[in-house]
Length: 410
Image (cartoon, rainbow, N blue to C red; front, side):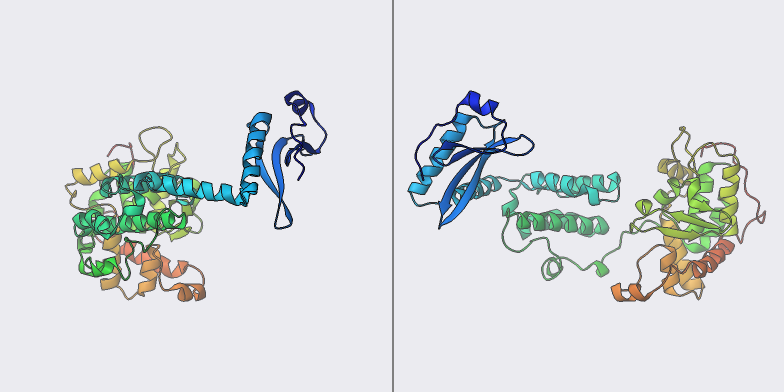
């Protein structure tokens, strides 16, 4: 390698425009590409092969700084070291040192930001953050490479029996965060939050715990409740009755817009973004459900089927809860009517389990079974939902009349 150096000048470097390599000597080159962008290269031979090491762009590395970097690289070569490998080793060491002080909270926040595009919606992202801060707050300040089984148990034990569903989700989220940390070289060893073969030996199995389901009204009481709903002139009452008739979730109902309804075929198509499973769900509508929606459509001033008091906003979940409170039914939840429906279908009808589960938009069977199942059993589900509508309407005083709606108030 020639040792003649300092061929270039700062002014000359700024003026150069010809594409290609321009030597400063000693292995240092200014490279100009076809677009005119300029960057520094250090070129050398290692084991008989020519190597190029980038030293940075001209905008961030001056000529003097590039010469210093080239000089450091030549010293490494003189010492028998590959400057490219030496730089990688130094970067790895710096990262390892930084990783020693990396906390669970910092890593979790960064990971959530990285994976948020895979969440169904902003609410799901917020649930990740809030659940970890609320229930795994003990882990937040700990170094991520030092978290062990005892730390995970300290988080899970206080909520494992009382908030079992929440605890299960928190455990899964901790496991994913620690797996990601291992994949990025921030941890080593087995994941202390894994369930199978580890925490399942230390915590009670889910089947032995209270499931923590939303409080459900006994299905025997649902017809009388629906009759009371039909005596109320409120959007919240219509929304709750429609929720009961379709065995849907509150979020699916509140976000419903007119374009999702096919009145001719009596089908409501809920988009994947509003479904818990992240899949489009077609809901067959009973005649009563269709009547409710058509009555609302005749007086609609909003894109939302169940419009809220605020213009352009859907009915709030609070409005439905307050309605149940005024009806002195606050011991139950809107979501619990899904369980009421499921219990009725299982105990009072001969419809197959798979049809009832499909009506609830639950995933049924293993992957192979689902692959061979064609369609979504819409017409079979329609018969089930019609039977449910007849059941909850058995105490009606006016057969198919839709209660007039005069306001959005509860």
